[in-house]
Image (cartoon, rainbow, N blue to C red; front, side):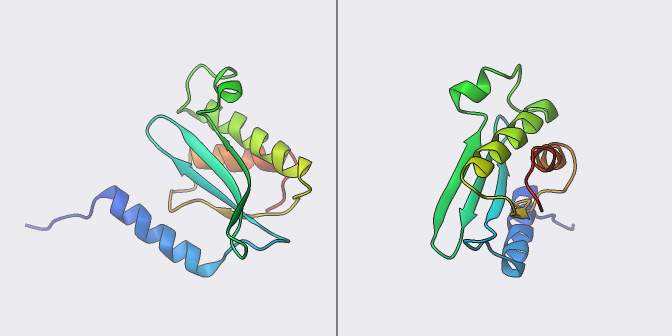
Length: 122
């Protein structure tokens, strides 16, 4: 019988392949996305210095107050707008998008599109 790798292991392997192709710099940091079953997290990271420059998640009280659910496409859109606004406030205009090994569809795509509409370039 053929055994399949778990989705989590496949995602982690994809993420490592993606991370080998690019990394964030001070001039163009990396917008990393992570999603769990209940929440989404987004960070803007400078990999050269090893610093998280900006972060946002649906766990935060002010973000959660705007949402009915924290794990749907609408929550991802709100989170994309918030992370873009915070990045622009810090002077970050262009980023490299790191989808974290997730398929660019649904929540991940909604977060990316909302960040683009809010003014981030990638």
